[in-house]
Length: 122
Image (cartoon, rainbow, N blue to C red; front, side, top):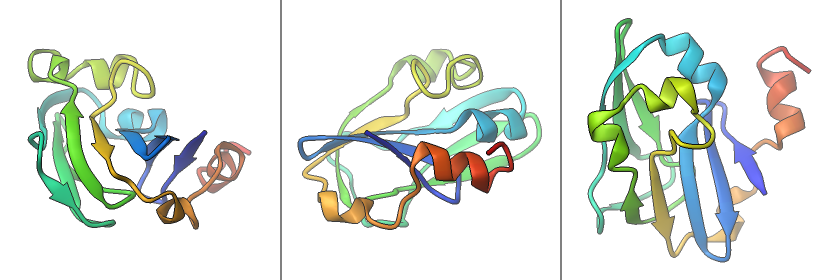
């Protein structure tokens, strides 16, 4: 199941592992993305910590960890193709995967329906 934050990150939980990215709404608001500073495998994050930085033609924006965990994998395709976040923010443009994520950290995050309402599309 996919969950959303008020900072426009999405998180997909599966058996202690999570995949994280930014929403299509956030990618659209940022404009053309030109660079992504990804975390490294093995980095650990607390919920709310700065996970990575996305730079666009408009601004540089921090992406926050929606859950606590350890980086297991990063989307290395973004190093050469940061525009994947604009083209496919919730599929090919994922940022990283964390392992050892605690499912209880998902409490308080929004469902797809509540996120749509949050951004005024519901």
